[in-house]
Length: 405
Image (cartoon, rainbow, N blue to C red):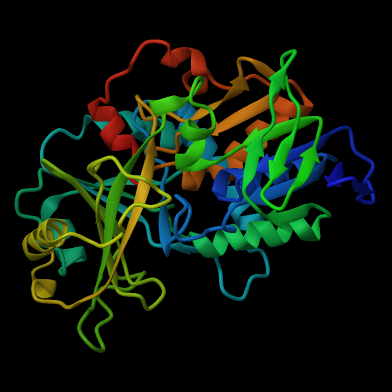
């Protein structure tokens, strides 16, 4: 790959590689794509406007959930299985692991068909899953009030991933493997004769490659208004951390699993995995949000909803102090499925996005998929293709279930 700055050109020492590839976006999808390409012999430059896991990105923040229940959709569960393997490789020898196993407790206030449909797939792929009777659940987890819950399921192989820290770890793995990383804003050069001619960085330099991957999260629609546009729809999402009683072990991993409460709204929470507090988030899609300039001050209404859920489900924490709050965004596709496909007008461009609040856990498998699309002409699953979005898809109940991040 050659970097051209003004009239002076200099070549980076090349690696023996079949492709020169530029990946724009060093979040979860972009970082893992860059790493997967390097492992397949490509020469890679990774670019990000604010750096891996930055506070504006969909991959920033403290933690994300990794779990395997995806209703009857085997494709996603298989991707989770592969992602677990790759997360474990990244974590090998790490004194401060990126993954903390907690299990995930699914509390259904009414219909649990989504979980039931997933159970045979999980068992077939080696993921333990069990239904727990309400009385037994109350005895096992005395910190939870199960009133109003109709069924309880536990998937044991699930837990919390460090988010921003993982993005940095992947970027470091990219540079260690011989990739180039640059913090810079990328501007598309013209698409001509069915190919993108390069990207210009805000320092005036230009990156030219054989192929380009755009994994730009909530900015994907602005970069490609004709192909993506509002098919990636960023929404404002609030996350809160509440203090637990001093000396209490009841809200730590090992004592409390990640939990998902399916009611009129879907809430989820993560135990105090890193001393940051008891995390709770409303998974219901928020209002439209500008990820660059949007106000990230939590709202009184959002805090009140979180407190109401805590008072109902975790009564010991009803008056717990809120010790931190964050505003992030989901980058929703119309149907909640990922977008991983070739640009229809540029054969050397792949677009990867539409994480829809559930994509982070899948990022290692997404990276492998994109890499195989570039080096082995692999086709993406039909539900990831742009062609499915020709007609506007309406969010469904499954979409809401799918999105728990």
